Length: 266
Picture 1 (cartoon, one colour):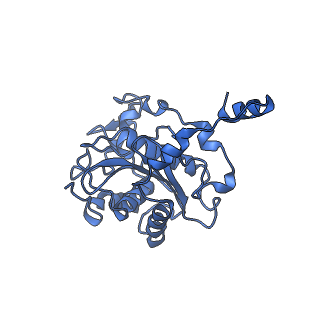
Picture 2: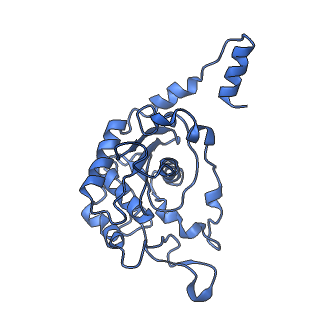
Picture 3: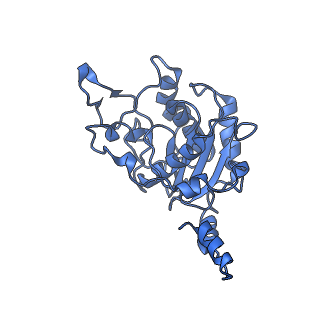
């Protein structure tokens, strides 16, 4: 029985309703992460400036803390329908995934997980673990989606997403504090936007990773179905597809460690 159904039952029986003390403690756990206003400002700036490849669509972004609690959900358009509605939950999944599979000394982006989770990969099936908390994802008043009181805020979303757009967040001193997820465009552009947002938030002191420059950057060495072989291939095991032949996003992403370098842990 859901908490909402239990509340209705208790009221109907004339019994005192309970309140969930965890909600307050979860929100308090977000105090050192970007606020709704800070996240929306960073995302809007990156989207507005452009140069991200892809479709130039409006975007969603979500930040979670180290325990997977959603701290903020934002969008860049004029209203919640100005970007793909489905990307709200996807952005939260990406944040959850990057947080769940990064460590204090080693970061994995959601883009880094793609090849390994395909048939024949060493992590095949990972995307089906840790399912989304559907009550949190789809509950509440839809008019609050993307607002400071988004129903997701203060809840653990769960979910695993294995394409670009999710990045772990590290303070300048190297402390891992959670992750950001971005969705609303091609997966390659989602990764680029997430990288630039993290850079603007000064939470990119990545300690190490599988990408170029010992970062968690996307790796474009994924080759699906080589010579009719049904098993896809990635030379390093952490590859991600390009988003169209000759797509500008490929060059933009490859240059991210130069144009938007990660800050060294101090």
